[in-house]
Length: 244
Image 1: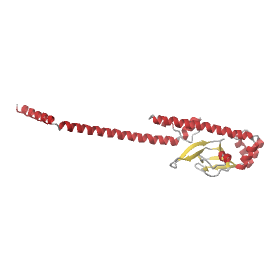
Image 2: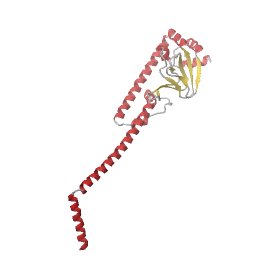
Image 3: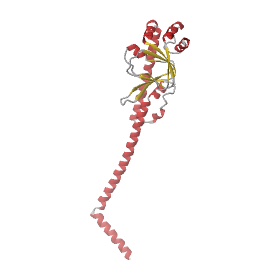
Image 4: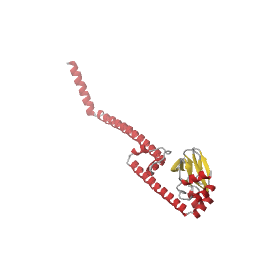
């Protein structure tokens, strides 16, 4: 089992630069966990005392919006780490982590992780790189959301067709941002549906107003003395023609 864990550690970005001896030390103190689809690995708000490394399978990182609905903010796959933030700053978990599919992860307790940081500066550098990558992705995520918000303001909903299943492996940060903005797509569809309903109601109201206006104009014309005299003259003319 130890050799298997060592092989798994070698595939992770965080520990890929450690030598076999260091990896063996980590492997002895790591444990393996299997998750089924939908199983919760981390709950938002709980104390963080472990670091997780994804061996296989994909995990979604979620929080809740103001209505209590799930909001996916990121996802992690094989070779990526989860949960190191709480170990570094001591704050409660900032989000929940749920398995998108059957998965296997490695768990390192806080004392083991701290020991590695104290003795291996290259691991600390790997963590910095990891945060840098996440920051770059966050920038892409925010840029995409702002761009689409501007399109909504202009009445352009063409980007709705770009939505992708969250479980698919993204080819780039742009693809990943598109997948994770599922809640945004749902909101946009609701806005468009309401807008379409309002347009239909406006068209119906405009038609009814036009009908009422035409009716009023007709009644105003037919109610005049001139129209009454004209009507009488037309009646007399028809009678005269019928008698001739």
